[in-house]
Image (cartoon, rainbow, N blue to C red; front, side, top):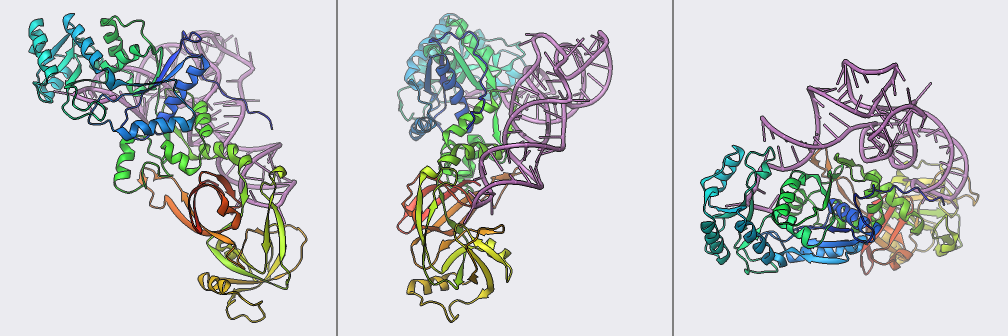
Length: 521
RNA sequence: GCCCCGAUAGUGUAGUUCGGUCAAUCAUCACGGCCUCUCGAGUCGUGGACUCGGGUUCGAAUCCCGGUCGGGGCACCA
């Protein structure tokens, strides 16, 4: 096996070995998706490369949004991805620090309280005009600030604004609000605080508290660099961290953002955040995509500043190569019909390899009789008189495509089980044994039908969720079929290949039925 | 509307910093051959791209200007 040349990310600017600190900073209000995973991967990757520290930081400064279950969700997903943080930080624990820093700005004359209604503030900002509140005396500002902290204002009544630059081309610089009143209970801090920092303020300071040296994030924050740098500058929090941006990653046909996934979950168009059609980390896991695939694709795509639209085939192909050698092969027949082989009285016992390219994996024994299941799709293609091979067994020839094995005479005595199966699967094919010789021609997948020494299998087969932005009604197919007995002893999370069908991950087991998800062909 | 950012095959990328070695890399994809007791893997081959217009230059994917297209931002969300 030749080692594929691995792409490497560009070096980090001013990176000193041992001193690099990076962070992955999600808001705990939804499951981790591919975009998050890439951000986390890059941060982790660079921290490792320079023997630095990778921090998981929860940006939970909006009590309306933060939910306790999502803290855990991010931790779990990171662990599964193998991106373990060296340190975890919860931003809402640092609210007192933000209050302190805000006060410092007020004392320096760099911030003021403002009671403009939202619309008015927005309007004035777009017109590059200050409001009268900007002219307030320092003592008045400090007085109002203290009232804010004590909870004497309602939400929306007042904010603390930074003295930025009203004439700036960059609209975020025009005296942005940096702290606001929030009265909702926070999932961790409860009602301890009335004043909460907004994103830019919290982020600028928190990166410094954490000692973050290099920040990689998605490009929507491009215009905030100036603001965040200014906040740090005013507070003497220097030097500035290095910030690099990259554009959004899209998978064609799969909504990437929480904003788009949430409604799908709520409308029941998907089965939950971990639906196998979604590119959430849990969805990918459930489908049978391995962490290494996600990392390899992140590396392949890199940190481009142009939006990317990855095709599912890239994910499938990458994943297939990674799991191919480690996935055992099993026999599975989707949508089965029953086949009888005449002219052969003795039973056979075959040793069939678990992997065609790796004999060391060994074999499993399968005892065959005269009754088999074969896929309907193969059955449909067969013609009377045609010869074909039962894969790994022998050759047979079609006698009657529309046989009724219930009434057919000259069949060996049928067990009660078999009689039931014949009724349950009413399409019957009558063939006769010809010979053993392996020759060119169709090879058909089979599972024994003489007894119940098999297992019922249900497969979920995912397809793209959206085609040209329209929800794909057929994005999830349920395929029922029958698998060989060995499948029954597989464990949940095992990834195997059903031959001539595709790679699947074992999702759930019941007493005599197993539920699997198809990752891809 | 205003402000940023970007543009290499269907898709993802390499090359752009420092113009010639680029009739453009690798992968995916599609098609065909070989191999294989899978529709998987492997292997060989074929197909397909420098957004457009102008400029600089002996020479432009690479530098400059303009257009077009795409993405993002302009919150008392993050």
